[in-house]
Image (cartoon, rainbow, N blue to C red):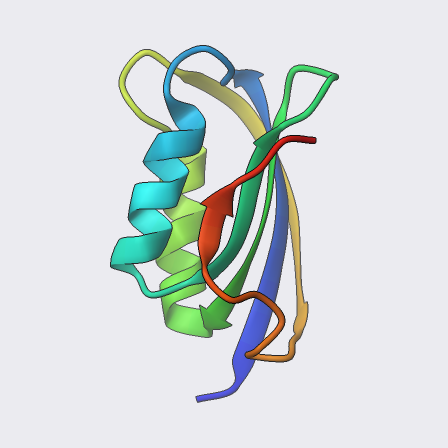
Length: 94
């Protein structure tokens, strides 16, 4: 299956509610690689690479978020990727 890259910004009450760790745990479970970070504008941003199916599951989870969050909008796009672009999935500082 071809590698895809998902770039997403999650807008709403998504900082201070464990959103980044929710994303990281899900990404590891789905065998995705990439990163997630809090952005200064209050959003959570992420990039993830993997199979299209796993990325669709990941995107749907971003739209729901963990308990305590309130997702208002998820902007995103897909593009082809290099499967070796990221060594793993991690939480990073902006």
